[in-house]
Length: 255
Image (cartoon, rainbow, N blue to C red; front, top):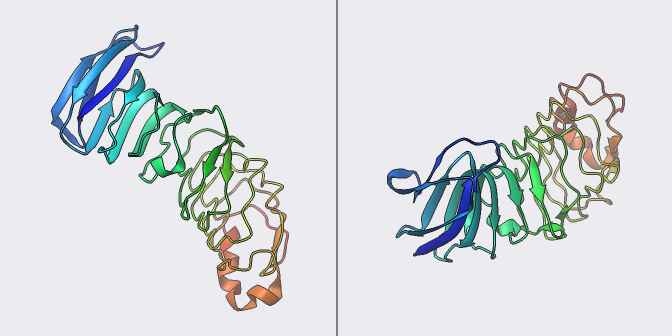
């Protein structure tokens, strides 16, 4: 299978090689000598799993065969000229989402080291399970271009251990959501909850929601959470609800 693309050294890089290999088998790979000018590369690979390693590279994938199931990329920036079917694991400072869908992000880590997203349109999260989607995201804010659709039922750990200071201002969970436990667990920089999330949680508002746990566990900079739970609907699960706010500096609402 031929993998086609082009790559160059990122702006501040001095020198680097890009290694393209079978997943986790560097000895079976090929090296591309990078310069500050774009250069084309063509790699013939037999495996269904491929890995790109070049911290200092800007990479554009022009052709990634459909037979490739998994693709791991370490680079400064990555973009794709065409839609791809592979599951992606990215360690990239900048990611262009123009030809990607949420189906491409079923592997972890998704955004380790990422500080910049590029969009040409809103990016729809459409899978039933979008667990841990922004886990370990390193920037302080997440774009409103990420949109939760009605298909999403599970967003447990969605922002787990990320560096976000605020939830996206338009962040809204749909009425049919099932799981939101650990939504922002260990987000130690979080100070602001989305205005679309505040209010009283009840079976009328979210009829299929399992009792959430550790939603804001160890979010030590949150001073006030404008969220309550309707006692009548959650009284039998009060101990689970109490775990939502452990580790906060203050919590003024009674459950």
